[in-house]
Amino acid sequence: MLQETRLHRIRALLATLGHVSTERIINELGVSRETARRDIIELEALGAARRVHGGLMALEAEPEPPLSVRSEARAREKRAIARAAVGLLKPGQTLFIDAGSTTTMLAEELRTMSGLTIITNSLQAALKLSAAEEGGQLQNAIILLGGNIQAGAQETRGELTVEEIHRYRADVAMLSPTGIDARDGASSFHPYEAAIARAMVRQASQTILLADHGKLGHGSRMQYASITQIAMLVTDSGAKGTQAFAGLEKVLPKVVVA
Image 1 (cartoon, rainbow, N blue to C red):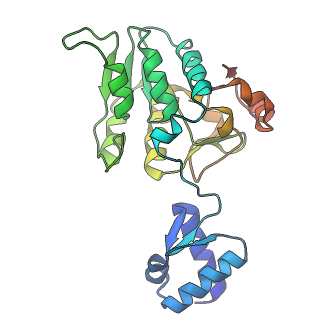
Image 2: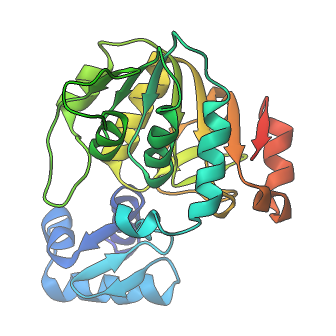
């Protein structure tokens, strides 16, 4: 196999996975370790990837930090976004929310409302929504989606979770992406997060994105909603100082600045 062909295949793997180990290159391409090493060096020299211990990392593939860390970042802005988002809802609606720091704050704010049915894969959101004295009455109906839970995870995920989402229809999906771009729409870093968000978008009549200004104009490796599938963006006042804001205002039906 020519090196040009090998490099093309490795770049395709990087585009899908974000990180490719040396072992995977050897197995996928059927090459020796020395050949894999040379290809890794070449891709780094071309500026197509970054060499890391044990393989390659796509240049743009920087995973989000853990939820506990993200919750501290731009907390004031996320709180403002969550409060503005609650103002868009009406009693009687069914709502999807995914797992994220902003949607966890949204869950806290949703306790000020009543008469909603809230469907989520977020353990933290479900706990916030159900916080009450034992035997007390909840203001909203809470449905926690089943699925797999990995070590340290605060959400359910996997095929079972996606299948459960397709059992429901929602009026609104309120989702917190890794990034939103005027051309490429909403995206997540992890494939399992994108699969859940994509299913929620499909099963909801309207999709509203909750994204602080640091996410505007950025994309991640897994798109889950095109720009035409997004009805509204709720962001914070810092968004007006970003280059991406004007572009998003042009292509989205509505942008709310909290």
